[in-house]
Image (tube, rainbow, N blue to C red; front, side):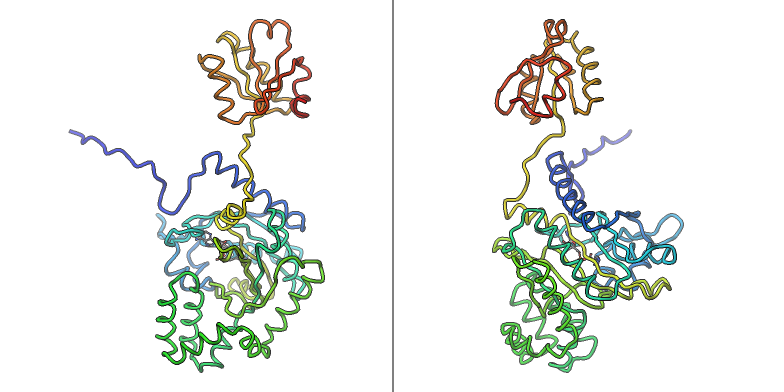
Length: 435
Ligand code: HAM
C-alpha cells in the first residue's frame, strides 16, 4: 500500500527569496532606477543564461568564490555546469566572442540574478540580483571617472543624500605590495593576509587579531594594528605606488565634475574578492551607524578577456546588489510606498452585471487603463473592501441604472470623493484623477 505522503514545507530554499507583489513592487522600483540611470549614461542592456561551464570561473574569479561558494553540478552529458556567481566572466565571454564586430567603447548593463553558496545573513543571500554596468575598450582614467560617476548618480536617483554614503577608492595590488615591503611576506602569506583583511567587519576583532597573528606573528600583528589606526602614516607610505596618484586623479576629476556632496577617499585597506582586477578598485559605503557596510563595488579589469585569446580589451565596471540597496533604502527611509498597477475596480450589484462589466473593462483596457472586475457573489460592500485592501485607487459600481444610462459614480478610495462620469470620460478622468 502507498504510504501517506508527508506534507511539504511552504518555506523557500535557504537563502533565496519569494517575491510577493509588495516585494516585487520594491524590486521593480530598484531595477527601474538602476536601468534608467544606466541608460541615461548611454549603456545598452544585454543578458545571458544563468548556466555557464564551470571552467569559466576557474581562471580568474578567485579561490573563495570558486571553491566555497559556487553551485556546481554535472549535467546529464557529463559536463560541469555552474550557476553564475557573478556576471563579469559572462560579459567578458560575450565581448570576446564578438570582439571584431563590436564597436568600442562598449557600454553595457544587465540586471542578472547570481548565486553564491554563502551563510545567509543581513545583506548576504544565496541568490541576489545585481546591476552590472561595464565599459570596454577604454584605457585611460575617463572610463573610471564615468563608471564611478554612474554609481554616484544611481545613489542620488535613489534619493540618497551625499552625506549618507561615501565612495572609497584603492588600486589592485597596492595593498599587497605594501604588505610585502612592510613585512617581507611571500606570495602565499600576502594572499592569506589580504583575505583576512577582506574580512574586517565580517568577523570579530578577536578573531581578526588571531588570524593576522597566525600569519605575521604577535609583533607583526601589533604593527599592522598601529598602521590601520593611523591612516595618514599609511598613506604616506603608499605615496610611491602608482595607484596612489591614480586614485587621487580619479577623486579630483569627480570633484571637478561637481561630485562634491559626498566623500571620495583613498582607502588603502579596501580589497575586492576577485583576481581579475588590474587597476582602480572602488566600493560605495553606507555611512549610517545602523548599516555601516559596503553597498557595492567594482574596478578595472584589463586582462580578463585574455582567457579567451581575445587580449587587449580593457574594461571597467561594477556590480550593485539589490539586497544591499534595499537595506540601504530601508535604513534611510527611502523605500517607496506600495502601489498596485490596477487603476480601476468594477464592482457589480448583481451577478447578471458581470458580462457588461467585462465588456466595459475590455474597452477601458484598450484605452490604456488597468482594470479588474468583480467575479464573485460577494456583497458590494465586501467588493469595495477588497478594492481598498488591494490599494486600487478607483471603483465604479454597476447596477441597473448605470447599465441603462452609461453614467457611473466614480469613487476615489483614498479620499472618498465621488463624481458622476459618462463612459466616454472615464479614462481621461482617471488619468487626471478626480478633483
Ligand atoms: P562583488 O563585490 O562580488 O563584485 O558583488 C557586487 C555586489 O553584489 C556586492 O557589492 C553586493 O552589493 C552584491 N552581493 C555580492 N554577493 C552578495 C550576496 N551573497 N548577497 C547579496 N548581495 C551580494 C562582483 O560580483 C563583480 N563581478 C562586479 C564587477 C562588475 N566588477 C566589474 N564589473
